[in-house]
Length: 164
Length: 153
Image 1 (cartoon, rainbow over the protein chains, first blue to last red):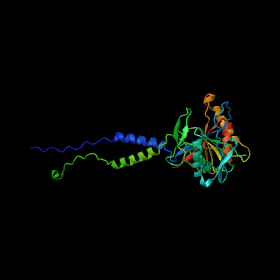
Image 2: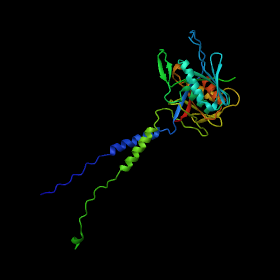
Image 3: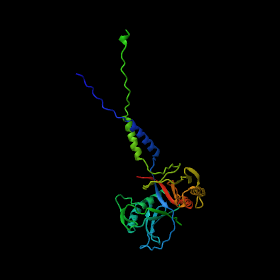
Image 4: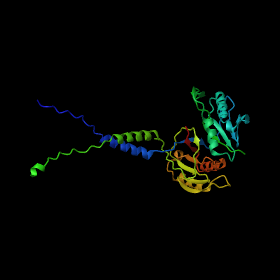
Protein backbone atom coordinates (compact mmCIF):
# COMPACT_ATOMS: atom_id res chain seq x y z
CA UNK A 1 0.00 0.00 0.00
CA UNK A 2 1.42 3.33 -0.99
CA UNK A 3 1.34 6.25 1.42
CA UNK A 4 -0.44 9.31 0.04
CA UNK A 5 1.49 12.53 0.28
CA UNK A 6 -0.25 15.23 2.32
CA UNK A 7 -1.06 18.06 -0.09
CA UNK A 8 0.46 21.40 0.87
CA UNK A 9 -2.00 24.32 0.93
CA UNK A 10 -1.57 26.50 -2.15
CA UNK A 11 0.31 29.74 -1.51
CA UNK A 12 -1.21 33.03 -2.50
CA UNK A 13 0.85 35.18 -4.80
CA UNK A 14 0.90 38.49 -2.94
CA UNK A 15 3.41 40.25 -5.15
CA UNK A 16 0.92 42.11 -7.42
CA UNK A 17 -1.16 43.35 -4.48
CA UNK A 18 2.02 44.50 -2.71
CA UNK A 19 3.04 46.40 -5.84
CA UNK A 20 -0.34 48.11 -5.94
CA UNK A 21 -0.20 49.01 -2.22
CA UNK A 22 3.27 50.50 -2.61
CA UNK A 23 2.17 52.66 -5.52
CA UNK A 24 -0.91 53.76 -3.56
CA UNK A 25 1.21 54.65 -0.53
CA UNK A 26 3.57 56.76 -2.62
CA UNK A 27 0.64 58.57 -4.20
CA UNK A 28 -0.91 59.26 -0.78
CA UNK A 29 2.42 60.35 0.72
CA UNK A 30 2.96 62.80 -2.13
CA UNK A 31 -0.50 64.31 -1.75
CA UNK A 32 -0.59 64.27 2.06
CA UNK A 33 -1.00 67.56 3.88
CA UNK A 34 -0.38 67.17 7.55
CA UNK A 35 -2.22 70.29 8.65
CA UNK A 36 -5.89 70.52 7.78
CA UNK A 37 -6.40 73.76 5.94
CA UNK A 38 -9.74 75.25 5.08
CA UNK A 39 -10.96 78.55 3.71
CA UNK A 40 -13.36 81.24 4.81
CA UNK A 41 -14.71 83.19 1.86
CA UNK A 42 -15.39 86.91 1.82
CA UNK A 43 -16.03 89.15 -1.16
CA UNK A 44 -14.94 92.74 -1.54
CA UNK A 45 -18.02 94.97 -1.12
CA UNK A 46 -19.62 96.17 -4.35
CA UNK A 47 -22.21 98.93 -4.42
CA UNK A 48 -25.41 98.10 -6.29
CA UNK A 49 -28.80 99.73 -6.64
CA UNK A 50 -32.16 98.09 -7.09
CA UNK A 51 -35.63 99.43 -7.90
CA UNK A 52 -37.30 96.67 -5.91
CA UNK A 53 -38.73 97.73 -2.59
CA UNK A 54 -38.30 95.01 0.02
CA UNK A 55 -41.36 93.94 2.02
CA UNK A 56 -39.43 94.33 5.23
CA UNK A 57 -36.67 96.75 6.20
CA UNK A 58 -33.27 95.13 5.56
CA UNK A 59 -31.56 93.63 8.58
CA UNK A 60 -28.21 95.29 7.88
CA UNK A 61 -26.55 93.19 10.59
CA UNK A 62 -23.34 94.91 11.63
CA UNK A 63 -20.82 93.66 14.19
CA UNK A 64 -18.53 96.36 15.51
CA UNK A 65 -15.45 94.66 16.96
CA UNK A 66 -13.66 96.55 19.68
CA UNK A 67 -10.75 95.25 21.74
CA UNK A 68 -12.82 93.50 24.39
CA UNK A 69 -16.39 93.71 23.14
CA UNK A 70 -18.67 93.14 20.16
CA UNK A 71 -21.46 95.60 19.45
CA UNK A 72 -24.32 94.09 17.44
CA UNK A 73 -26.20 96.66 15.38
CA UNK A 74 -29.19 96.18 13.11
CA UNK A 75 -31.34 98.29 10.80
CA UNK A 76 -30.51 101.14 8.47
CA UNK A 77 -29.94 103.52 11.37
CA UNK A 78 -27.56 101.10 13.05
CA UNK A 79 -29.54 100.64 16.26
CA UNK A 80 -27.53 98.88 18.93
CA UNK A 81 -29.13 95.51 19.64
CA UNK A 82 -26.66 94.24 22.22
CA UNK A 83 -23.12 94.66 23.46
CA UNK A 84 -21.33 91.41 24.22
CA UNK A 85 -17.99 90.97 26.00
CA UNK A 86 -15.49 89.13 23.83
CA UNK A 87 -14.90 86.47 26.49
CA UNK A 88 -18.61 85.59 26.31
CA UNK A 89 -18.57 85.09 22.55
CA UNK A 90 -20.97 82.13 22.76
CA UNK A 91 -23.68 84.67 23.60
CA UNK A 92 -23.10 86.24 20.18
CA UNK A 93 -23.98 82.93 18.57
CA UNK A 94 -27.16 82.65 20.68
CA UNK A 95 -28.18 86.21 19.76
CA UNK A 96 -27.59 85.59 16.05
CA UNK A 97 -29.76 82.44 16.22
CA UNK A 98 -32.61 84.60 17.54
CA UNK A 99 -32.03 87.23 14.81
CA UNK A 100 -31.93 84.55 12.11
CA UNK A 101 -35.34 83.27 13.26
CA UNK A 102 -36.81 86.71 12.48
CA UNK A 103 -34.89 87.17 9.23
CA UNK A 104 -34.64 83.71 7.58
CA UNK A 105 -33.81 85.21 4.19
CA UNK A 106 -30.82 87.22 5.37
CA UNK A 107 -27.42 85.65 4.82
CA UNK A 108 -24.93 88.47 5.20
CA UNK A 109 -23.20 90.20 8.08
CA UNK A 110 -20.93 93.22 8.04
CA UNK A 111 -17.82 93.14 10.24
CA UNK A 112 -16.28 96.39 11.41
CA UNK A 113 -13.09 95.48 13.28
CA UNK A 114 -10.96 98.08 15.03
CA UNK A 115 -7.56 98.80 13.45
CA UNK A 116 -5.62 96.74 15.99
CA UNK A 117 -8.15 93.93 16.36
CA UNK A 118 -6.24 90.66 16.04
CA UNK A 119 -6.88 88.29 13.15
CA UNK A 120 -7.50 85.17 15.29
CA UNK A 121 -10.24 87.08 17.14
CA UNK A 122 -11.81 88.05 13.80
CA UNK A 123 -11.78 84.37 12.77
CA UNK A 124 -13.46 83.48 16.07
CA UNK A 125 -16.21 86.07 15.46
CA UNK A 126 -16.65 84.79 11.87
CA UNK A 127 -17.03 81.21 13.18
CA UNK A 128 -19.75 82.35 15.55
CA UNK A 129 -21.48 84.39 12.84
CA UNK A 130 -21.51 81.82 10.05
CA UNK A 131 -22.84 78.76 11.83
CA UNK A 132 -24.67 77.52 14.90
CA UNK A 133 -22.08 76.23 17.34
CA UNK A 134 -24.38 74.07 19.46
CA UNK A 135 -24.93 70.52 18.21
CA UNK A 136 -28.38 69.47 17.00
CA UNK A 137 -29.76 73.01 16.82
CA UNK A 138 -31.28 74.17 13.55
CA UNK A 139 -32.99 77.30 12.29
CA UNK A 140 -35.25 77.64 9.30
CA UNK A 141 -33.98 79.56 6.30
CA UNK A 142 -35.72 80.45 3.04
CA UNK A 143 -34.27 79.76 -0.40
CA UNK A 144 -34.79 81.75 -3.65
CA UNK A 145 -38.08 79.92 -4.32
CA UNK A 146 -39.41 80.87 -0.88
CA UNK A 147 -39.10 77.30 0.32
CA UNK A 148 -38.27 76.82 3.97
CA UNK A 149 -35.53 74.45 5.01
CA UNK A 150 -33.71 73.61 8.23
CA UNK A 151 -30.09 74.64 8.41
CA UNK A 152 -27.21 75.27 10.78
CA UNK A 153 -26.03 78.24 8.72
CA UNK A 154 -26.61 81.71 10.11
CA UNK A 155 -24.99 84.62 8.26
CA UNK A 156 -22.34 83.05 6.06
CA UNK A 157 -21.61 85.97 3.76
CA UNK A 158 -19.07 88.10 5.54
CA UNK A 159 -18.34 91.62 4.38
CA UNK A 160 -15.59 93.75 5.89
CA UNK A 161 -16.03 97.42 6.53
CA UNK A 162 -13.76 99.92 8.17
CA UNK A 163 -14.43 101.82 11.37
CA UNK A 164 -14.08 105.55 11.03
CA UNK B 1 37.07 5.15 1.32
CA UNK B 2 35.72 8.16 -0.52
CA UNK B 3 32.40 6.54 -0.86
CA UNK B 4 32.03 6.22 2.88
CA UNK B 5 32.28 10.01 3.43
CA UNK B 6 30.33 11.15 0.43
CA UNK B 7 26.84 12.12 1.36
CA UNK B 8 24.12 13.19 -0.88
CA UNK B 9 23.38 16.85 -0.25
CA UNK B 10 19.70 17.56 0.12
CA UNK B 11 18.43 19.87 -2.60
CA UNK B 12 17.97 23.31 -0.93
CA UNK B 13 14.50 24.71 -1.26
CA UNK B 14 14.26 28.47 -2.07
CA UNK B 15 14.13 30.48 1.17
CA UNK B 16 10.75 31.95 2.02
CA UNK B 17 10.42 35.37 3.65
CA UNK B 18 7.56 35.90 6.04
CA UNK B 19 5.98 39.14 4.87
CA UNK B 20 3.01 39.11 7.25
CA UNK B 21 4.47 41.82 9.53
CA UNK B 22 5.39 43.97 6.52
CA UNK B 23 1.84 43.66 5.24
CA UNK B 24 0.51 44.69 8.67
CA UNK B 25 2.62 47.86 8.62
CA UNK B 26 1.57 48.66 5.07
CA UNK B 27 -2.10 48.33 5.90
CA UNK B 28 -1.75 50.61 8.95
CA UNK B 29 0.16 53.17 6.85
CA UNK B 30 -2.47 52.97 4.15
CA UNK B 31 -5.32 53.61 6.60
CA UNK B 32 -3.43 56.53 8.19
CA UNK B 33 -2.70 58.11 4.81
CA UNK B 34 -6.25 57.61 3.60
CA UNK B 35 -7.53 59.35 6.74
CA UNK B 36 -5.24 62.33 6.20
CA UNK B 37 -5.95 62.54 2.48
CA UNK B 38 -7.17 65.95 1.41
CA UNK B 39 -9.04 66.32 -1.87
CA UNK B 40 -8.27 70.04 -2.06
CA UNK B 41 -6.08 71.21 -4.93
CA UNK B 42 -4.59 73.90 -2.69
CA UNK B 43 -1.03 73.08 -1.71
CA UNK B 44 0.25 75.37 1.00
CA UNK B 45 3.85 75.78 2.12
CA UNK B 46 3.79 78.01 5.14
CA UNK B 47 6.58 80.54 5.52
CA UNK B 48 8.54 80.89 8.78
CA UNK B 49 7.09 82.89 11.67
CA UNK B 50 3.52 82.32 10.66
CA UNK B 51 0.88 80.58 12.73
CA UNK B 52 -2.45 80.04 11.03
CA UNK B 53 -5.47 80.64 13.32
CA UNK B 54 -7.82 77.80 14.24
CA UNK B 55 -11.34 77.80 12.87
CA UNK B 56 -14.47 75.70 12.65
CA UNK B 57 -14.64 76.28 8.87
CA UNK B 58 -14.94 73.10 6.81
CA UNK B 59 -14.69 74.35 3.23
CA UNK B 60 -11.69 73.03 1.35
CA UNK B 61 -9.44 75.58 -0.28
CA UNK B 62 -8.85 75.92 -4.01
CA UNK B 63 -5.84 76.79 -6.08
CA UNK B 64 -5.30 80.55 -6.43
CA UNK B 65 -2.59 83.14 -5.83
CA UNK B 66 -1.32 82.70 -2.26
CA UNK B 67 -0.40 85.79 -0.26
CA UNK B 68 1.17 85.19 3.15
CA UNK B 69 1.87 87.72 5.88
CA UNK B 70 4.13 86.63 8.72
CA UNK B 71 4.52 87.88 12.31
CA UNK B 72 6.93 90.62 11.19
CA UNK B 73 4.49 91.97 8.56
CA UNK B 74 6.55 90.63 5.67
CA UNK B 75 4.48 89.93 2.57
CA UNK B 76 5.12 86.76 0.60
CA UNK B 77 3.61 85.78 -2.73
CA UNK B 78 4.00 82.11 -3.64
CA UNK B 79 6.82 81.79 -1.04
CA UNK B 80 8.80 84.76 -2.39
CA UNK B 81 9.19 87.75 -0.13
CA UNK B 82 8.15 90.92 -1.88
CA UNK B 83 8.30 93.50 0.89
CA UNK B 84 6.77 94.69 4.12
CA UNK B 85 3.36 96.17 4.84
CA UNK B 86 3.94 99.93 4.95
CA UNK B 87 2.86 101.84 8.03
CA UNK B 88 1.39 104.62 5.91
CA UNK B 89 -0.97 104.45 2.96
CA UNK B 90 -3.78 102.05 2.19
CA UNK B 91 -1.96 99.81 -0.28
CA UNK B 92 1.15 97.67 -0.58
CA UNK B 93 2.78 99.01 -3.79
CA UNK B 94 4.99 95.95 -4.49
CA UNK B 95 2.04 93.61 -4.08
CA UNK B 96 -0.16 95.76 -6.31
CA UNK B 97 2.42 95.72 -9.10
CA UNK B 98 2.86 91.95 -8.85
CA UNK B 99 -0.86 91.18 -8.77
CA UNK B 100 -1.52 93.48 -11.74
CA UNK B 101 1.22 91.67 -13.61
CA UNK B 102 -0.43 88.34 -12.77
CA UNK B 103 -3.80 89.63 -13.92
CA UNK B 104 -2.32 90.82 -17.22
CA UNK B 105 -0.59 87.46 -17.75
CA UNK B 106 -3.89 85.60 -17.26
CA UNK B 107 -4.95 84.74 -20.80
CA UNK B 108 -8.54 83.82 -19.98
CA UNK B 109 -11.28 86.14 -21.27
CA UNK B 110 -12.00 89.10 -18.95
CA UNK B 111 -15.16 87.56 -17.45
CA UNK B 112 -13.39 84.31 -16.64
CA UNK B 113 -10.22 85.79 -15.18
CA UNK B 114 -9.35 84.51 -11.73
CA UNK B 115 -10.71 86.74 -8.99
CA UNK B 116 -9.86 84.62 -5.98
CA UNK B 117 -6.85 85.12 -3.79
CA UNK B 118 -5.80 82.93 -0.83
CA UNK B 119 -4.85 85.05 2.15
CA UNK B 120 -2.71 83.45 4.84
CA UNK B 121 -2.15 85.72 7.82
CA UNK B 122 -0.39 85.13 11.08
CA UNK B 123 -2.96 84.82 13.87
CA UNK B 124 -1.74 88.01 15.61
CA UNK B 125 -1.88 90.21 12.50
CA UNK B 126 -3.83 93.41 13.26
CA UNK B 127 -6.84 94.26 11.12
CA UNK B 128 -5.12 97.33 9.64
CA UNK B 129 -2.64 95.01 7.89
CA UNK B 130 -5.43 92.72 6.66
CA UNK B 131 -7.22 95.74 5.33
CA UNK B 132 -4.22 96.94 3.33
CA UNK B 133 -3.73 93.51 1.74
CA UNK B 134 -7.46 93.17 0.93
CA UNK B 135 -7.60 96.67 -0.51
CA UNK B 136 -4.50 96.09 -2.66
CA UNK B 137 -5.90 92.77 -3.93
CA UNK B 138 -9.26 94.33 -4.77
CA UNK B 139 -7.60 97.22 -6.63
CA UNK B 140 -5.62 94.65 -8.67
CA UNK B 141 -8.86 92.84 -9.56
CA UNK B 142 -8.77 90.02 -7.02
CA UNK B 143 -12.04 90.62 -5.21
CA UNK B 144 -12.74 87.16 -3.75
CA UNK B 145 -10.79 86.78 -0.54
CA UNK B 146 -10.24 83.29 0.81
CA UNK B 147 -8.89 83.38 4.34
CA UNK B 148 -6.89 80.25 4.97
CA UNK B 149 -7.38 78.77 8.43
CA UNK B 150 -6.50 75.60 10.25
CA UNK B 151 -9.13 72.99 11.10
CA UNK B 152 -10.03 72.80 14.77
CA UNK B 153 -12.04 69.76 15.81
